[in-house]
Each structure stands twice: as C-alpha cells, then as structure tokens.
Length: 188
Image 1 (spheres, helix red, strand yellow):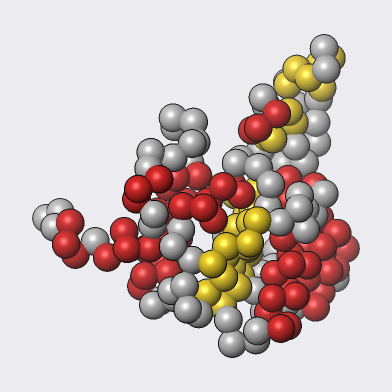
Image 2: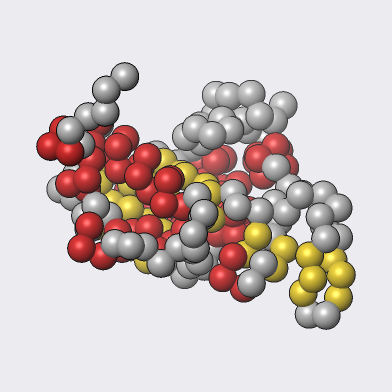
C-alpha cells in the first residue's frame, strides 16, 4: 500500500508540532496512543470547538499539552469527576479522559467504579503501562503478578488488577479497550 503524502495526513493538524519532540522516554507507547487519538479525532471531526481533553497527573497526563484541543490537567485520580462536571455544564461537548492506570485503577479507582455505575457520557482512554513511570518504576495496581520491582529498598511482589476487578464492584459491565458502558462482557 503506498504511503500517504504529508498533505493528506490531516491528523497532524490536531497536534502542536512546534512542541515536538515529546518529553516521553524513547520506546514509550504514549506517543503512539497520542497519534492514534489524533487520527480518531480527525476521522470523527472532533476539534477544539466541540471536544475537551481531560488528563491527570503522570506521563499520560502530558498528552493534553500536545493536542490542539482545550485540555484540563487535573489532580491525580480526579479526571473522571472533572470530566463529568464538564459534561454536566456543557452537555454538547465531547469529553475525552486520557489517563494512566494510576489515575483510573489506583487513586481514581473509586471514581471509575461510580462513573461506570452512572454510565457517565464521557470517553475514557486508560493507558495501562503497569507502573508509575515518573517515580522510576514504582509498582502500580496493574503491575503483573509476581513481577519483581525494587522500591524503598525492599523487594515487592504484587497482584495485578484488571478491568474485571474495576467493574465488578459497580455490578455493571465494561468494554475492555473500548468506551465504558453498561453493555459489555467484562464482569458478570
């Protein structure tokens, strides 16, 4: 398949290219997530007039600064309450939450459960990188089982949480790798 000429790559209009290269570490997948989000925003014709990006603290939270959209940088774990508030005040806006596993599964886990329970009309993109990257590799709630991490001079063994763990307390269902709704197959 031939490569598209640069003029046809309109998703780049969604990015603040003057800020590139990004601050993310070489090999980090967040840049790829950002490019894919820009492509989806372009394909769905979502722009700065009708879309707000809500991000949290951490590596993934920096994404809002690279997109040409209104972006709200929130406190750690508070992306969903802020996103729901925006959607309540401006129901015509598309609200997209871009957060890491710390914002959604750890400190923001309770907010995630209740947003699922309320079937909040927001889109959540959770980057599950299995660690707290800005802390030098501290274990997070989604760190794989029995993975060794060294923090605070002690060896830590962890239990990984999954989307099923997050949704079960809400007695609802969610879609893995898709928008959270009440009609999917994660938890029963």
